[in-house]
Length: 373
Image 1 (tube, rainbow, N blue to C red):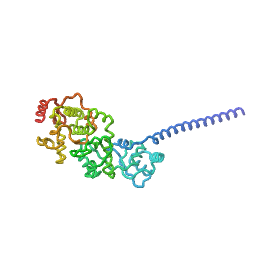
Image 2: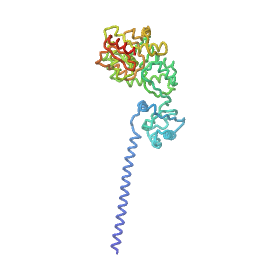
Image 3: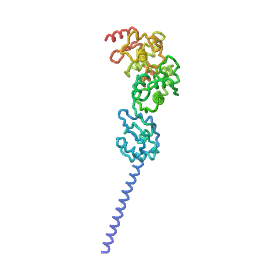
Image 4: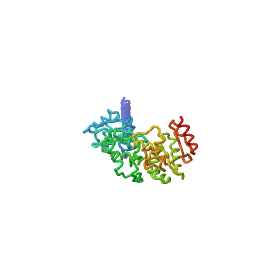
């Protein structure tokens, strides 16, 4: 009887040990999972990666960006709740934790900010610590300085006259501006360099700060190899931008840009004085905008004879300055024309495309054909 009791006792002890062992293993597994999860969360939410404000802004789709307003005096918890309510973040606790751990507490600026739910927590924090952004402005390719000033003025970002004056009188230290000649014939000194893009502007920042945003963007887009390529072409950066601005205004078709560029390059290299006159309608349209405040759908013969330094029907070579602010595609076309092309002329076909010709006789036939339609 006593032997049976002892066996039962041993079984109970063994079961108890097994139970404790199972609990210990469960706890160990839980601890491992918890540790891995914590480290993963730490790596994701709290890291030493340097955040570049401009790069973060470039990730935000202007059409879908979420505008959040941070009230004056709001603390981190208030801000976390606002972001949760606006659908920017899911976990206010994590936002507060990461904010405190990374030293963002107390640095957030009141006002309206544009963020995106796909940004990392630290990227959102970097935006909220920067000056409020209240206005989104899109500048499309081919706009000139006066048109850009009008757009910015309508958005109440700048005073138009002050902006244009700043473009012409303020000094900016950028490598690409060093080639610009001092010429009384040049209408706007920064014409061509206000890079077309979508921008987030703080209207309180002032005209100079707005201009610097354009120029910073141009500086980022105009790659180091572009400077080298300009030298290979025996052109200054300014000459490249002047040519790119003409290409921008002459065609909207991506596949045509290198060919249009080749026409102008071929004419500029010609020993024929008449071919050196680029005869670009776009330059005449620029004159009309400057003198009459508008462009024409179709130029007259009288228009092409306007006595003006920008008139490439009368003057050889490139005009004194760009006629608009070109996009990257036109800049690349100016730098890398179609090297196989022997074209010297082109005429609009009426559908947005152009007919290209190698000889004057062929060109005149094309003009007769397409202008008759």
